[in-house]
Image (cartoon, rainbow, N blue to C red; front, side, top):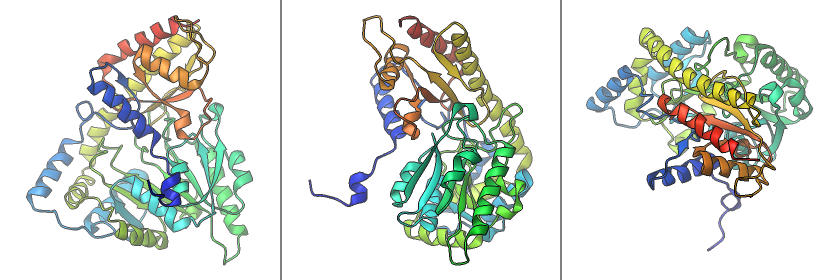
Amino acid sequence: MSKLSHLAETLIGSEIVKLGNAINERIRNGETIYNFTIGDFNPGEFPIPAELEQLIIEAYQQKKTSYPAAEGILDLRKSISQFIQDWEGLHFTPAEIQVASGGRPLIYALFKVIVDKGDKVVYGVPSWNNNHYVHLTEGQHCEVNCLPENDFMPTVEDLKPHIKGASLICLCTPQNPTGTTLGKNALAEICELILEENASRGPEEKKLYLMFDQMYWTLTYGDTVHYNPLTLNPAMKPYAIFIDGISKVFSATGVRVGWALGPENVIAKMKAILSHLGAWAPMAEQHAVAKYLPMKNAIGTYLTHFKSEIAFRLQSIYDGIIALKQKGFKVDAIAPQAAIYLTIQIDLVGSKTAEGNVLATQSDVTQYILSEAKIAIVPFSAFGAGANSSWYRLSVGTCRKQDIPTVLAQLGAALEKLS
């Protein structure tokens, strides 16, 4: 085959999508596998809000099928402005809001606006897809290894050595893949670090920006609180760009309506890039979301039920993992905080199977859990952590409550067979 561009030749596709597709193919072939890999929802378990569904149908019936405005229709941007004011106390004008077909094109556009070839991009690992966006923009990877004792979130001490000369810091809270959150003091310290660094840069120097991915911000459980940089420090507004949308808050991953909030000059350049890509949210869905976001009572009712269903699954599996740990098995988990993910540890390297085979690598462990317990989960190595990491993401978006006892029993039985 003929040689392609350097980017094409060096590009790595999504490890999570690849794994999920492989698992789904095995399921289609008749194999029983409990698939906890993809950060998506089973619409049978988690449908979108009924009001939103009806509004989408009506928008198509009203022939809302032409090109939308490149920045998103004005009615939607006004609704987003009011929505974030009502629910988060954040103030952004429609000119500071960019709509696109979900979070991915917004993140790509933001990277293209901020990151020049060779620019340092600082991000923690494990984290979702930062490594790929840095590669797509030919930036310089500056990975910060995050630790379980910090809930796999970066601290100001982790970031400080890498700030000089950096163009972008990437934070996601609640975080994919860990389901953990950045605490108030930790986020406030990171904001102060960014402001101090920008104050030290000359007028001709590029500033240090923060990409703040809060796609899961409504999905917090128990005493967990979501904090954002602008509430903690309003001086961050010229440097912070939020990534948000309906994908997770309304179980609407396939509806494809996302938005970015940020400084007007940054948003304008993102609009220009997206206008060439054509990565617009569909016109009908934009009109529907514009009408749905003001429905505060309906949204409140939906979220109460939705969050309780997610929390039940996370807590039930967490309790099961901890029960196995208390029996002496080499497993662990971080208590559920947010999102649709549970961080679990399966530390079995060196164990021997009933057939006498040694699980020599973490990849062997992953395959053993899949083949013996019929459980598919994503190793943190798919999110930038080392290949030897014994930690995993378990997503409950497609989990049926009635399957949880079986899943835990099969995991326990698989662990029992090891020596």
